[in-house]
Each structure stands twice: as C-alpha cells, then as structure tokens.
Image 1 (tube, rainbow, N blue to C red):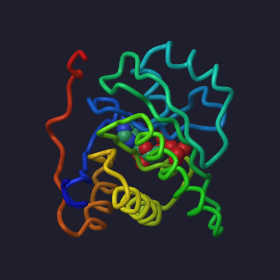
Image 2 (cartoon, protein in one colour):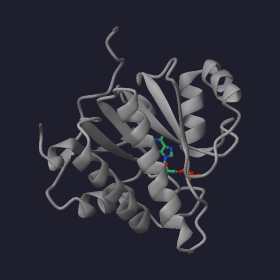
Image 3 (cartoon, protein in one colour):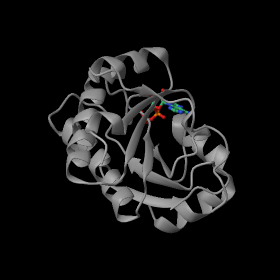
Image 4 (cartoon, rainbow, N blue to C red):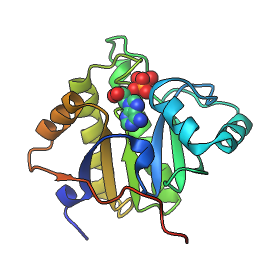
Length: 186
Ligand code: ADP
C-alpha cells in the first residue's frame, strides 16, 4: 500500500485526455451537458454519453452518478454537481459531498485511478483556494480509509489553479505526464 502522498497527483491540462479509470465531470443537475469541463467531456465522449445521461434523470447538487466513457480514453465518467458559490456555510459541505460521493462510487466500482477537475471553480465561481482546500481534505480522508482508488489526480486547466493545488500539497506531488493517450483494450 502506497503512502497517502504517493496516491495524489497533479496534472496540468485537459482532463479529457487522461487514460484513467474514471474522470469526474463537474456537471449541472440536468446531467444534459453544459459549458466548461462538462462541454469538453461530452464533446470528447460523443453522443452516446448524452443518451446514457438522459436516462439517469438528473442528479441533485452534492451527489454523483457514474456512466461509461465511450470515446474518451477514460473508461468511466463520474458526474457530480457542485454548488454555485454563495459564500454560505453550505458551500463547503456540498462541495465536500461531491468529492466524497464521487470517491465512494469509484471505490464501489473497483476503480484504481480517478481524475478530478476543480469542481465549482469555473462558472460556479468557487474561489479556487477554498475549493482546493475542500478537495484535498475530502480526498485525503477517503484515501486514508480505502484502498481504492489507488490514485487520485487533480487535473487543473490553468497554471494559476495548478499553483494553488501544488501549494496545498506540501510534499510536492508527482506531476503526471504518463497517463495520456488511449487506454489499452481490456
Ligand atoms: P463549474 O460549473 O463546476 O464551475 P466549470 O467547467 O465551469 O464547472 O469549471 C470547473 C473547473 O474546470 C474550472 O477550474 C475550469 O478551469 C476547469 N476546466 C474547464 N475545462 C477543463 C478541461 N477540459 N479539463 C480540466 N479542467 C477544465
């Protein structure tokens, strides 16, 4: 069993390029696609993803749902709905629930590697420093109690967000390079 610090990695770039067991989508409650990372995931996965999402009938804020990855290099997509930032005490509770519920699904499905975007830190306006603190705490808590997923990647789409996460992980986490490309056939 690797230590906690070996199980959290950082990636600067497009989450849709990662050949991991699951990427997490920062979706909206309809699960029918949107802008930002949601739009990028649907574009890269193809129309079959939207069809599967439509059958799920939505997802409340803080919860998570799992689908196939279709044309993505990732095998699965875990869709979670982050809170729109309001500055209330409920924001970090709901955001932490997104990470916890996504990780619980990953564990239940036997997934070894999961990549998260900075949920709510785009259009939903969560300040990245605060969102990062919630993310890191929730992931550390889950990993401390579970063998799976073995690896969690934080996929950051800007150097500024990457720097915030790097500062929050004081041991200097591995910067991922090697998981891009298509997944090997099972
Ligand atoms: P939300 O509505 O939850 O705020 P957004 O998609 O607007 O979701 O933003 C969430 C985060 O995802 C932001 O930090 C944004 O920069 C980032 N992001 C957008 N596109 C991608 C992508 N292709 N890969 C990784 N992160 C992305």
